[in-house]
Amino acid sequence: MSLRVTAMLGSALVQDLGRPGRSEIGVSPSGVFDRRAARQANALVGNAPGAAVLEVVGALSLRASRETAVVVAGAPGPLTIDGVPASSLRLLRVPAGGVLSVGPAVVGLRRVVAFAGGIATDPVLGSRSTDTLAGLGPAPLEIGSPVVVAPGPVGPDRRQLDTGVWGVGDLTVRVVLGPRDDWFSADAADTLLRTGWTVSDRSDRIGLRLDGPPLERAVAGELESEAVVRGSIQVTSAGLPVVLGPDHPATGGYPVIGVVVDADTDLLAQAAPGRILRFRRHPAP
Image (cartoon, rainbow, N blue to C red; front, top):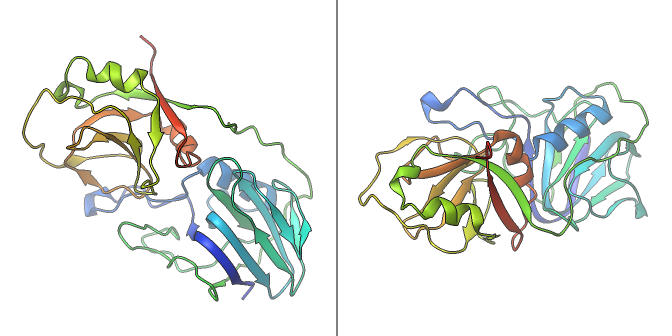
């Protein structure tokens, strides 16, 4: 054993790059929401890009049973080792018996914690990711949970500047309209693109629920369930968009008015409740 949870507020999940290619058996890819942050943290700590990490929303403290090398990436926020402030995006060493405390994000939402060697849990369908919808993978961490870290080499002690998109302004992502935009009125696509949508506090890894003006349907009735992907913008019966996250179902029955460009879905990981989200058509007309 390398670490044990001593305190937490919110959620902490084991995640890697997911289990793609399983949709034919009804399993979505899942995986870490902010893939860029996970790759960055793993690179700095000396792991392979797909090594398992912790995805933290809120606050988490871990006591190490042996010296452990760690990097925290993703949203910025407080970070301490035995009460002494430490820096994100820097290789840190938690001494045996020491406590790593990861505070809540001050901008954004999710923080990613990588340990040298990666988290050693048994893979399920080729992945160590926790799928919150399907109930696959490791159980969410709670106070007292162990975090077992595999032995592995440690990366160089250097800092890598974060080039992520932070700030308190509106968050804009690119979207390709379709495949079911023809199920909506002629004005619905314009409304989708010109509205500043408010991220709801009912959002989670399954989908970002957005509040704003309802999108008017042109086709009544129900759509037969069809395959959906991360970034699909489903429109509920109330006319409100839901942008599907990594734990989305493999199929869905709500019409999809558009799909967020895959590279931009990492930005959605940091869309905290109350943030304004805007869609920009891609490619631009």
